[in-house]
Amino acid sequence: MKPEDCIFFQLSKANQAGSRFLGQKVSELGITPVQALVLGFLKDQDRVTSGELGKRTELDSATLTGIIDRLEAAQLIERHGNPNDRRSIQVHLTEKGTSLADSAVRLIAEANRQFMKILADREKGELLALIRKLREQASRG
Image (cartoon, rainbow, N blue to C red):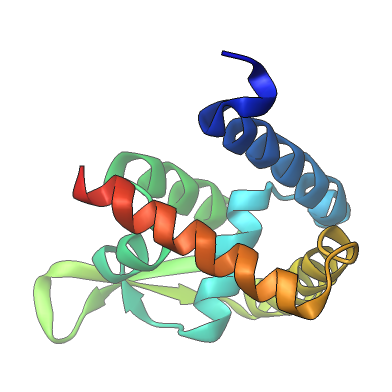
């Protein structure tokens, strides 16, 4: 099979290119693309449990724990007990984290526009719909 005909190869290379592109955009913040996305998700909905954050980010608990550890060490987030469930913790943005999350959200939105600028609006919608469809199919096995 030729690489240009293999969907797995093409998706892998698109993912690498996208990750590199986003990494260049958020590098000025001193955080990784995944950290920027996590901060963006928290900016959208702060004070969530780590389990809720894991569902939103679609990261496994070990990966998310490492990211939370690094963001906490950088004083961007804090962990607090969950008043509704003593067995879980809630993740909160700090003041510094809120400021950085604002910048991350802005840079991610800008990167989205720049990365997809060669596509017409209709194509952007179609591409996102097709990717969602493929992800749903893959999750069904």
